Image (cartoon, rainbow, N blue to C red; front, top):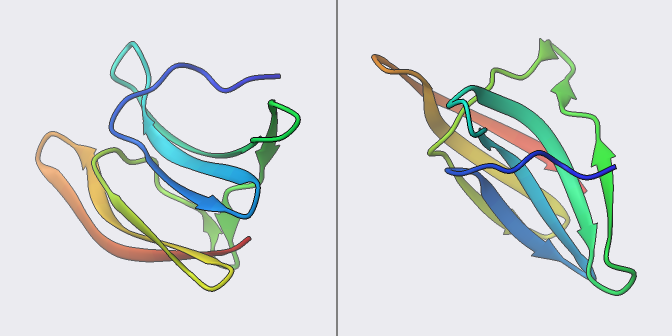
Length: 92
């Protein structure tokens, strides 16, 4: 299984993995999926992308940083006139 092609996503490198979050697909639909690409085996693995409060809003154009073993994601665009100002933290 491989992720769909996308743009306006974010990614961080953690160890031997490239972690990719959200973005928008070729139809301009916003995504909220989380994938890991193993740089040694060159294989993809889909991670769950939800938090304790429920589903994560789909988004594109957000930022991401790595802090220790956490991927921290901020903001993004949900819709043309709907910008997000939330923060997500994934324990990789």
